Length: 401
Image (cartoon, rainbow, N blue to C red):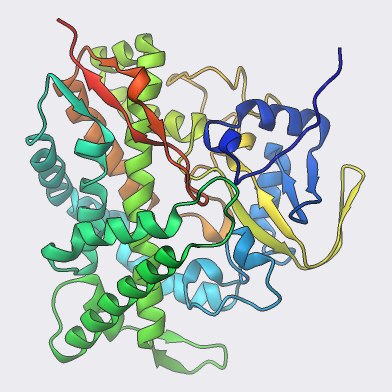
């Protein structure tokens, strides 16, 4: 029996439709995978991916997070915290961490709950699309409300994000429409920043305008408009996409493992554990790309300096060396087995992880009320084709008679 050539192409239809078998082969056959067509490397085992996320000196974020940007010769121009390495990253992170304290996130629970309830109240509870009618809307509403974006622009932010992330099979670079969408979002944020400089409000834009951070020379300095707009672009994008995809994946996964849905129906206290297992089983972000800052020897392969390196956390989560029976979805899984990389790891662990977990948990609680029994209409399900982000764009369900 001949084995087909191992090809990991994150811009292929095969990848968009679920690369789990490709990941398995990479872990077994090529834990340091090289793609000669696009000149990048990829790490797929949990131990290697987790170590790389923590080693920012070797695997730099300053050149971007996707292949199109990382393969350029210059550090990324946008002033986003996710595109910084320490010490610059540490200074910005210490500022924005104050916005995402446990107390601040918990104070948002009533607003999050009200937003979720408002959108779920609009659906036909006998038959609706979990993503198109529900989870596409409330996450961006939550994060943009937190930022201070006026209501009439909030869903527009989601559309801009979707356009910027969309990739057709074979497409590496952002489309012209995507670049235009990013430009329109930045223009909106610049406008709002100017308004907050003139008239501060109780929102994140106003707090960022008023904030000061310590620069490398020890001096204190306010954030400029470019830095604030970059942060808003990052937060709006992550806030719009992550929970949307996680809730859509939840509907699909629990339909495939109905006994696990029954466990939640019997015991709602298991919801937080279910969120963690969803993040492990099929995370909304499959990978991030780093740039190698030195030559790295790993598993008999040398990664040269200056190469894009894919860190495949979705593959790491199916590594049998890290998780027992990794292809099984089990909300009772022992959480101490290995590090969950679903919201990143190391200095770039997701700022809004606690908020995303809370949103997803509340959404699951409401779906349990709404859909104690449901069927997925599999023929009409559709996956997204996006940069970095994975999951479902259409998950129609119905309540059986």
